[in-house]
Image (spheres, helix red, strand yellow):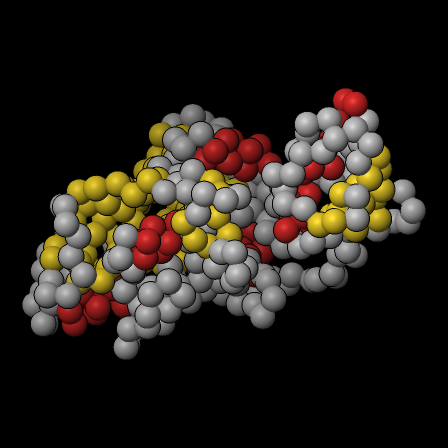
Amino acid sequence: MTNDNVIMLTADETHSGMRIDKLLSACGGEISRSLAAKLIENGSVTVNGKTVSKSCTVNAGDEITAVIPEPEPLDVLPENIPLDIIFEDDYLLVVNKPKGMVVHPAAGNYTGTLVNALMYHCGDRLSSINGVIRPGIVHRIDKNTSGLLIVAKTDAAHTGLAAQIKEHSFTREYRAVICGRLPEKEGTVNAPIGRHPTDRKKMTVTEKNSKHAVTHYTVLEEYDKYSFIKLRLETGRTHQIRVHMSYIGHPVLGDDVYGKPFKGIDGQCLHAGKIGFVHPITYEYMEFESELPQYFRDVLRKIGGGETRQYV
């Protein structure tokens, strides 16, 4: 170690063949696996003076350097923002997030987030596993996706919920309006998702540095140029539904990142309508549903020529 922000080490025989991210997280506990991956992605890790990908394996004698940037100080302040709480006990909450609300603070969105609202509602009764920026946040949905997500109040609840997500035993069902008509009424998109090679803010279907991703869909209603569908996530990758629908040529309506904008709404017409899980403390299976929000019903009326259907 040369200073507080730089880790330097030489791989020995016991490290030979080990992935660089695993090696960094195994050396002294100063770098977690997720931090190692982020440092590698940002080009802050070199092997023999050259930047590498996280899939790089090392050989005995390799010189490894990792530069850890100083954490940016950030005070996340409680804000009295109304929350639509579907369920709450001493261990967790199920919240119905409105379209347009960011889940946790990040560059350009330090206030008005779900976390700011949760800190006002819960005080210090939120899990600390994901740090000061994401207290209580077990999983996320995008800013312009509405619907249900779970918030953990205790670390034990957080750990139990995260394990279910990792094991794919977590029920997550969405509703979406997509462009065009699908060839089959039911189907599955099984295509790995990774970071876009040139636009680091986007995800894409790729075999390189990607993760297994599976989305199941069912057509609920067809229109002239659009379809109203139900989707069930088998995995939960970043932007998974939006990427998979774009990949098969039917982007989510209004998705200005993976498709194109739609007049009258900001961002994609996508709603997390059902969530199911085993309570991490009581072990009771729980399932919650959220009705389609007004913006979504307005879109259905618009593309349906003003007709009112049972789901509108």
